[in-house]
Length: 359
Ligand SMILES: [Zn+2]
Ligand SMILES: [Zn+2]
Image (cartoon, rainbow, N blue to C red; front, side, top):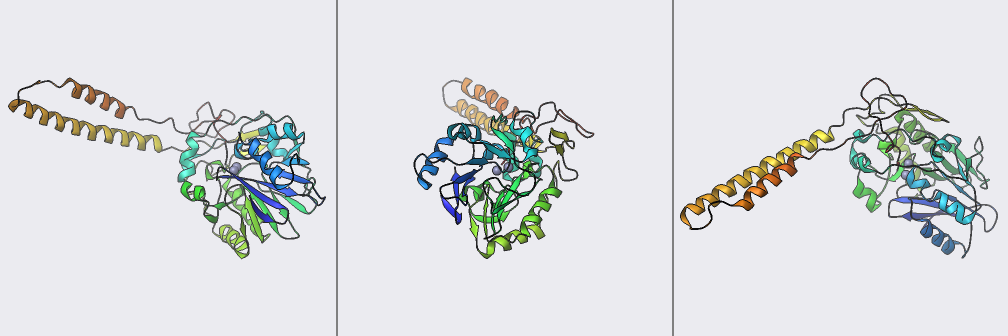
């Protein structure tokens, strides 16, 4: 666990996902901000017991947004502690099993874009979730402001404590580079854009970063990456805001998905995903190389049999040849996911349940 600022502690889960214990102004009271990937409720309870006292309970759970790595243990923890869960009203439809997020866009590139093709589907139905109040007020945390920062998730919120300029930035940006999985896993500190395949609105994502940079934070804790404090916090965020790297290509680059309280109302058409073609080329290439190697090997064997007494026909080699060729030629990939609500012109596929796993 690492302290972000007075009364604000970061817990990292699996070196990738962060959540925060935020103390209220009442002694012994605290709020859990985000809940990590599913399957870690016991770790979070143990960390809270260690940080406060054995048997401690928060007054509430607050979700910055509903992606799987932030809402993963919300149901289990809210039942265990018997506390409410709060999220922005625009996230409720995704947290109660009524809608799914816009489909992830693997065509934006980068390691996370590649990995997003394989993320499992997300489906939460939280029984205790309720809407955060309208405006900037944060339940139980009077010194904090809530800032709506859409673009990555429609109802994503960041939290800012004005007194000491502490910022919990959610996935509006990250404090480790999301475009490189090694950087993310090594937790190298760098204020960067976050969760590119899940950013359904790049203009809003940039505007959210600008809004948070204008706060000039002294300490930053995000959904992903290490704590950053001191002058680099504001400087790094200002750099990101001024030179925000909108991807050169991607489904949501030219136009965003549109969402409302009922879910997703529009998604732009998919853009061609070149990965399946690349994999096919790699597969064919591997098959040709394998075939050439086997033919060369077979010719050597046959040449050898001309001079050395023994079997003239090598059945094992032929079997290897056919199975090797078959494996290579079957390398294909299913690609990204379609959408079934409303799409713009262009091809779409019927099932987009994998969309919105999030980061
Ligand atoms: Zn995340
Ligand atoms: Zn996210």
